[in-house]
Length: 282
Image 1 (cartoon, rainbow, N blue to C red):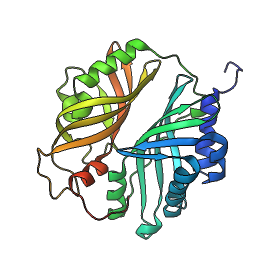
Image 2: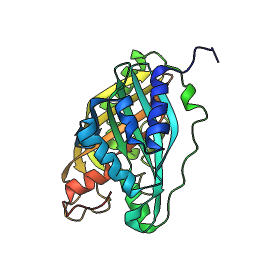
Image 3: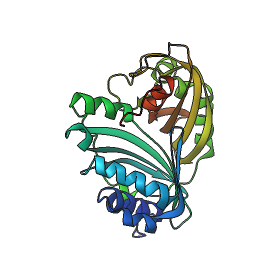
Image 4: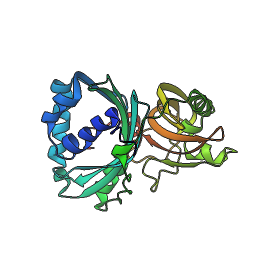
């Protein structure tokens, strides 16, 4: 330890995780978020801390009264921060069935409070667990997430990832990664059954956001292509139907290549867009 104390952005995120989320204390939001705080998830945007975001959070806490958030990875360059995590708890709406689901959030702040977050959570995995009554295991926590130092952005690492995205590996999913000549250690979604399948074929990506902290590069994509088949709840759309999927990723670059990382897709949102039906619980 250098004795300089924790990075201020990381210290703010500690309050976000410990004081707000895990204590379910929405009064903390006014201290750590700007009034126009915006959450982006899939095609949805929740804008306005008090009038939109806090009510949505309270609804989540009502469904999962014991909701917990476990941090697996934090990276920051001092201006932007990526948080890889799992949320887990028992649902009142599912007779106490429990679930654990992975997520990735890309945060922005103004030096004092949070401004926005682009996040994906694996709600398809959560839905499957709540239906089956068998929860997934929660991955191991980061050893010292709140001691994470800020690392400067690396334009070279960003260029590698932009090229990798342009080649369609991220949008193409595990199949595209396996066909790549580069051996990478990538996990899509929760890494469980079904996560090994592509959801889009012939996909192209629009980069909505991308930043780096040393060799770690975080990004959000909107991917357009053709439905590749295999998703639960898609009953009306055959494979080949035009489709869109949002994705958030956090990867690490070594020796000029994407070497490892995690990517979370909005598989449930895509399934619902392909097969519209009366609103179901997430």
